[in-house]
Figure 1: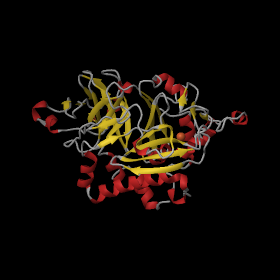
Figure 2 (figure 1 turned 180 degrees about the vertical axis):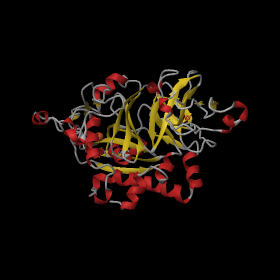
Figure 3 (figure 1 turned 135 degrees about the horizontal axis):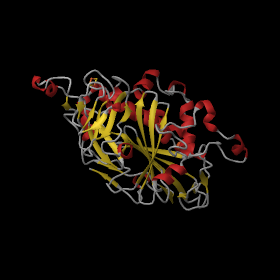
Figure 4 (figure 1 turned 60 degrees about the horizontal axis):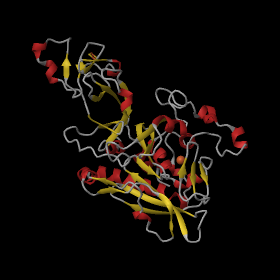
Length: 425
Ligand code: FES
Ligand SMILES: [Fe+2]
């Protein structure tokens, strides 16, 4: 349980909220590259941390990220013409390039020099892993882009299911860090089975345990924390443990326990206090292709989510829960692992009231997440310089990706690593 003030401090990001400032110190996921794939194509309105921006790919193929409102009198550049290496505002024709320079201003005499005095807010952009990344902090001190732990190299295979969720980013992130729920909520999709380790096919994930009461171990790290959920395996229960590790990479990413074939991650980008752009990511050479991934997760655009990533499942239609399916043995009546999570997150309220939580031993990771986030935001408030130095120091951030497997009892879980150790330098 935390206080109402702590809850607001942790969750709220809009305006001058300290948590929004924390997030502006990191490179953030803005949109998918394919959403602005065409040079000179339609610009995309993007909401991030309570503000509106426009992403576009100019006629020379460069990606740009600008404040949505035109510097002149605030009309939307998302409706603008994408032409001649800039976005032309429809109202009076001011054209802004990816650097924020006004490169045409037909409403003013060129000889006045007025055009050159204006600078529109433009942000540093990086394309990586099929994603447009943006840095929203001080543009005179843009930190070097560091590849995310879920796409450590430029050629990492990545598939992303994207869903816009009408609730706060923190409860979405807590959901990804809460291993205990998978044995209940996802029990029809993560099926206990006599396998040696977690396996996956196109219909289900299989896990070698029926244990719904895992034991937890947590270790703080310089990028956030990681923890292990330790369960009794179906085979060799007297001598072995089934271990699943999860990793929180501040401020909004989680490496979820993988399966034998591929890794899984999740990035929860706040659009504002009450809306989150959720990215469910499969990565690694054997991860399903993009279309198969979205199909497996019941998150196909045009079928499950619309062109703005809004799900057809919502609180007013009870997430299209199928009670007949439940009578036949399906646990939730809601297809797709993320759709099951989303139903829980949304019904917790727009910004979950954590003053009323009743936390038990299985919630140790949730407690650690709150501690970790509040520690960051309090440091940023009290000593912004030290905060910046801490998050930008180089060469120390080695992240062991999430892991799962059956190991002899007593194995040190903190150093378990699989096929892909990620060195962050
Ligand atoms: S408001 Fe954009 S050019 Fe006038
Ligand atoms: Fe879940």
